[in-house]
Length: 280
Image (cartoon, rainbow, N blue to C red; front, side, top):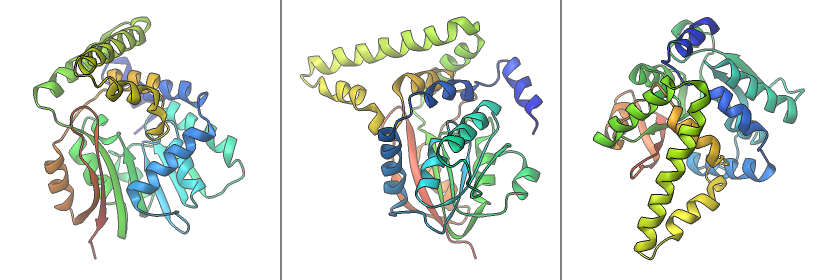
């Protein structure tokens, strides 16, 4: 799928420009954030390193996960539909591994079967918070699963289905993308921090304010990310689909996989699931 196709979707208010948001995150990237991201990735995969492994990052976004995989010893292939995300990933490569031939970065779509065929298969196929933004989540999961080697791992993060709440958030994201550009970030920040303030009041009345405060002050310990960038990502992230944890596990296991590690989202946020391929 071409860059023009992406631009057409943005122009018609059907797609959020994740890459432009991640360009702001690149300037905030520190060794500490990278370390937190590395710990998170290794913990979910239950390994100490990725030496000798091939790693596919579907929807590389900021490029942070691809960078971590490369630092852990993997041969990395990164792709994203968004040309600004491709720029971000290339930027990180130029900063940390400028001469590496073991990190390939491409623009492409997980919905483009001809493009995917050109990639081959991988020991680890990784897609964090991406496939639910394609507009065709089931197809995207199917396509990602086909890229996993025999005995390889599939690591996905998919938004939790909260019932009516999720449909409410769909409307909020739709509204964000239909606002004039100058109003989008103020809308996200004002609503995001208002909700966090109301949650702080709620938990303070329960004499447990640190439940909220610790999440705010220690935010980067979660995958090395940035609260401000993630707020924009959350309110703008469109298209938007979601699944209950049990449905996600059942669906992927039905494709010839076995769950080996999983973290179920309790409310907002993503289920994190790692599956091992059982295919012959």
